[in-house]
Image (cartoon, rainbow, N blue to C red; front, side, top):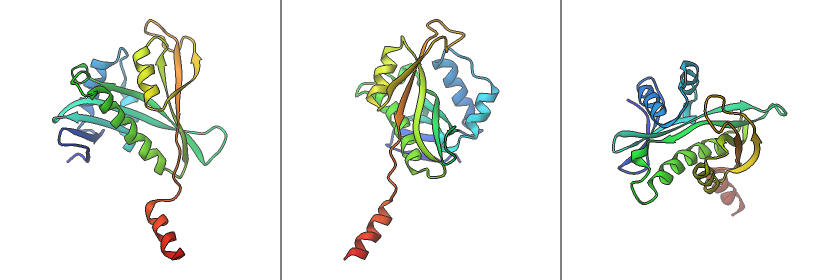
Length: 188
């Protein structure tokens, strides 16, 4: 059985496992202009909570795949690279902002996981996006990402090779609700 996080009766987030890997590979082949190899999928299989597939009415509709990268500057911090985030076309225009809803659910799932990380502390999540992909830039902007820099000729096998690096900081709540409640009881 695949572990799942249900957000509604129609939308389910599922971990990437050997059982769901075929869905992820098919989704990637239909959404992205780049062919992902076995090394990518091996990395995704080991990503744990940082790789999720979203199912809509029990059919795969989108996915997010991220990896943790240790900091070059401090042993106790890291950042997360969003390798892919995509939704199949037929789920993008269902009304009520379904495309935005699904992607936001995927991004927010990752952000909530990262906020709870303490060893190492995750400082940000970042990604590359083509400089000409205005819809994606607007979408990521609505989801807390900002342009950090431009990478000329980042994409080698597609037209419009330049990429922006978009970054979203991760703000941590260092005390969970239980710790806050314990403090309240002590103060009384």
